[in-house]
Length: 218
Image (tube, rainbow, N blue to C red; front, side, top):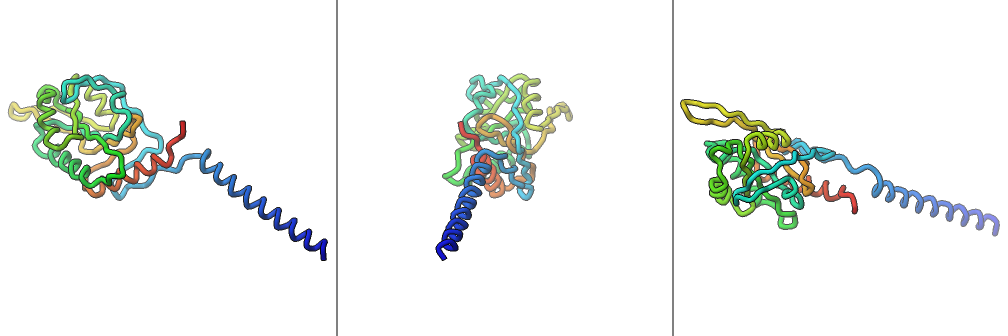
């Protein structure tokens, strides 16, 4: 009887050790293993990169007349939109959707910036950009400057723009999506139209939660 009890206790001890080992091993795997894949946000017209895409290096001018580089975009989340202040329809609607999105964001989320990259630097002076972006809110900003540099920035967020003359008037055809930069200044996601503020807010929260959960220490 005593031997039987000892065998039973030994078996239970082995079981406890096995369960503990599996638990510890699972935690080590979760901490040190591969990060979770990017969330599928296709229902929000959003594509999230598992590995963020680097933004091109640049030097441009913001709405205050200050020089801005890629490094200045680090430290916060930023929605980027390529457009221009004389845009008759797409840009005002896009900016209004971003303003409404900003109003819908949970106060527990980090405050993002909203950046208009000009596709018409000939007319979009810093002063004009400031008057335009100030209308939408304090977190809205603009970039203007050298046309080729602006094209490179647009390309690095998967956007394009083309100038054409119609009856002597400059019109600019341009992409309509938003790019979301992470706090490292890299492209984390692209969000295609149609844009609905409630879905944009939900997509941002999901992306932030995923990125934050997979953030590497150090």
